[in-house]
Image 1 (cartoon, helix red, strand yellow):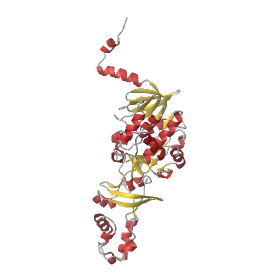
Image 2 (image 1 turned 90 degrees about the horizontal axis):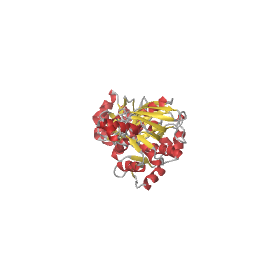
Image 3 (image 1 turned 30 degrees about the vertical axis):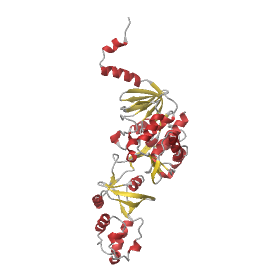
Image 4 (image 1 turned 90 degrees about the vertical axis):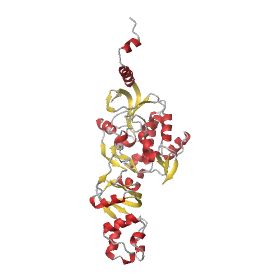
Length: 404
């Protein structure tokens, strides 16, 4: 008896036919499955010659975080990249960065027609939009397949292969690359899947928290909120770590580049802020001008701080010794933040897969053969300024180099 395909499908609805074909496709075995189509996953795909690769992502489009980063222009890297710019095990970081540093990245991009430009503090951005970077990565990985709108549920190792259970079927792969990022920006699909996979295979996941994020404040600092929208240059000290840059007063507390960098090194306890980093108070004491006019702060900020310190705004040469002592607090204003703005406002996730369980020469797990971890999912976090994208690209290069 001859059984035609058209007769077989005639008994199925359009949706049923789609699901039969789609699940058949999804169950096909691949050489490499990349979990996450963000910076590290796309770069890894672009660098690998093997075409039997699939990228799995729960977003409808690839590179969602790339497109919104850096105000839509993407801070690709930094002109000065050192291990000290990262929170994490320094030797591990050094061994990876030195194999594919900022110069290697810029050369690689330039060869493909993308020449990021320096905008501020050695920070390289796409000239027009982040889409320029995404287009390069997609073009280089154009032979690869994508399973989008697909949520990874579990990953199990069966004999010599992995079975990846997803919301749209099962993918069987010889190697699995976990490039799923962290928990920041849940609105664009961030999940804990990378950490869940690591734990399921016995990996240590060090404490997770929001990083490169603003601080909420205690009631004593609620007056900061009245200054929302004003930015000033400061120096922030946490333990022995100092960061300099702009602080932005916000509705929830304080933000801005200096605060975001400081958040990397804060877990709990006090921070100290020098609101007058370029001012010598001693040089002001003989001035006949009102103190609010010569502190080097926006007038509104100066007056509000004087009010909070209970110091009358009068000519500097009329201030008492006790009043000068209060003003000196602005050079070392110490307080414990109430917390952070959380993952919804965080640029990155601190903590992650313990790096002493990862081979720095290949990014492969030391516990499970053919299981690899890239980018933000690892317990390495860079400062603001392109360091985290560089980390994503460097780890992708190291991993791809070992597999080509």
